[in-house]
Amino acid sequence: MIKKVGSTLINAQHRLTCHCGAVELLLDLPDGIVDPRRCDCSMCRRKGAIVASVPLDAISIVKGQDVLRLYQFNTHTAKHYFCSQCGIYTHHQRRSQPHLYGYNVGCLEGVNPFDIEHVTLNDGVNHPADR
Image (cartoon, rainbow, N blue to C red; front, side):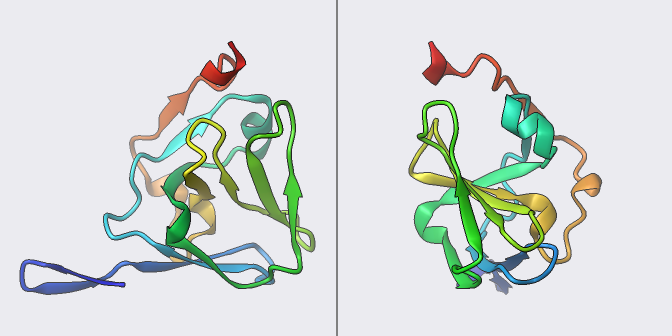
C-alpha cells in the first residue's frame, strides 16, 4: 500500500520476519508503529517483546505458514504465533481486541525496538477479561 502525505508518497508496507527467516509477514503500517507497549502478563513477561497492533486484514503471511505454531493459554481467546524452527514470537490475535493482531516490533526489518523512547506498560496481570 502506498500512502500519499502531502506531495510525498510513503510505502506503508513493512516486512516482519522471525530470527531464522522461515516466517515472513507483510504489515500495512500507514501510520508507522502506533501505541508500542509491553505487558506484564505471565506470557509477555517471559517473551519480553514490545508489541503494537494492526487490524486483522493488515497482516499477510508471505511465507512460513507451515512452520508457524499456535499457543493458547488461560481463556484460550488470544492466539499467539511463533516460528517452530527458531522459537521467535511473531504475532498474536489479541484477547482484549480480537479484531486486531499484536505484532513483535523487534521482528520488523530495519527497526530496533530499543530506539523507541516511549513504551507504555499494560497491566496484563489484572486483565479486564479476567474479572
